[in-house]
Amino acid sequence: MNRPPPVSVSEIWRPELVRLPKMSRPRRWFRAFGQGLAKLVASVCLNITVEGLENIPGSGPLMIVINHIGDSDLPAIISVLPSPPDAIGGIELYEVPILGKLMDWYGVIWLHRGRSDIRAIRAALDGFAEGRIIVIAPEGRYSLTGALEGGNGGAAFLAYKSGVPILPIAITGTENENVYGHLRRFRRARVHVTVGRMFGLTGQASARQEAVAKGTKQIMAALASLLPEEYRGEYSSKETPTIL
Image (cartoon, rainbow, N blue to C red):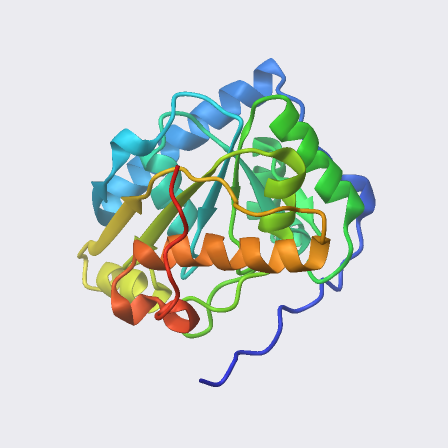
């Protein structure tokens, strides 16, 4: 199988924006409003079915890992979660008119993709230490194929450093051509969200590179196990990790 090109490197350098967002009263209100808006948009634009809601814990700390195939991924997933989560987002989105400002008000952990972003790592670890739930897309970008691409090591590294459990959530049907194609015909695209079971990374983190590589395979295999075969991509033949 031909591998897709590596994750692009962020051309924007705005380290002053990278921080763990403070949970002020205005931000809590805005997040609640944002989740309500996501539910409204999802109900109007998407026909969502959900499986495995009983696997979502009532509180953190928790790392949610998702596959990333379209613009509607996060609205669809946020709409089915019991409370608004934190999320890691590419710094490029900050400069998108309106969207960037809304995301910053919501409070994402901005990340410079393809760089050693120590501030983002510290922010995420601080968030887990506070008991937060953080959503991460281990592929680091939209899939160019619609199926799972090779995962990056960031999620596994954070999981080892923090010791938090991981909750895989897989989504199908949110490809842009599917969602926008249906909307042009005044129809709702069928979207399915599957919530897996929490698990922890096995093995020792003493040999960091080897442990992170193994942990990344576990995370991506967990996502693959929740997806139909045509969405599994590079992980179609991988074994499912041990589930706690």
